[in-house]
Image 1 (cartoon, helix red, strand yellow):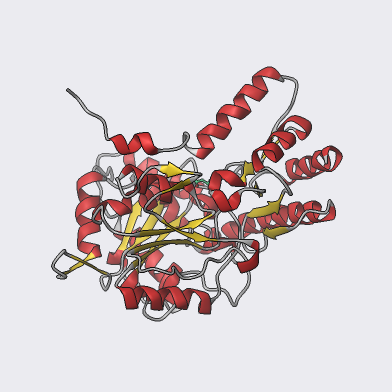
Image 2 (cartoon, protein in one colour; image 1 turned 45 degrees about the vertical axis):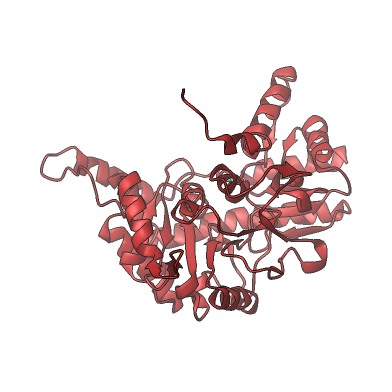
Length: 406
Ligand code: MLT
């Protein structure tokens, strides 16, 4: 008899964004005349930078001739891309990361979801709340939690983000082994300072824990004082893995390219306390289960680091940040407390009540799709997240409609 992984039965609802998509589709079917404006899932809307398109075309042409055709590439990614990433995203910021510590992949969602596989199922996992649901759900699937009770899975350590701590959780009160952090944060849009990150790095070094640091939104950081990478913090090479993505940075949500940094100094331990490099485990997992990203897409990602690509990416980021600032000002002028939207494409808004009701109200009265904060965890209740990924015209229209509806 084929049996299921019963951990899947513990999962609460369907994946948050599938749930929202279903509700939106049902609403649209019942109200076909309504033109919806989607500021829910953080999906980019602007075309790929011209430098990436040119690189894509050229790489496709290479595939058209036997002499330049490429079959399987290295699972970890082509050297040309790994070198560019290490140089431009890390070494240029004083972070000591080598090309062979970069693993190119098809998404930070997959990497941040898959990474837990290389650790024991009985480790203690600390996860912020509110949080990108992938970190929680993948640990539940792996069997690291008990049943859900009142919106929380037993056995997981929740790191609460609230208005009083500026949605930056404090260190856990008990020892934990694996810690998820995300800055600029999804969903709240808050960022962490060097000293805040330093506390986490010190904690991880003292407790022999590992930090999984999701930096998918780092390109939105404008404040020069803020760190872009956890490797800008001393000691992080020993205790942190970092996830990055070209999705939000350069418009690759449909094109798919991301990467994970696994420094060779990061250690994990056997039951008897012997150390093993996390790099060797992830390399084994990655080479076994993944065939990397297609050659043309890696060439397009490499073009992000060309001089033209850098300018075009900056323009994209500035465009979405301008939307974010417009949304934040609009919501504040309607009397709502907001955070985020300054070094992040997300604005986190205190909706002064039940977050799914607020979501429904914006959908039915304004035709605007947002994301209810409760979908990101118990501490998200009462909030909604609005994403800045859309055209400025749509953002203006959405804010005008929201103004009338509220
Ligand atoms: C989000 O809206 O939180 C993200 O777009 C989801 C993702 O990147 O997977």
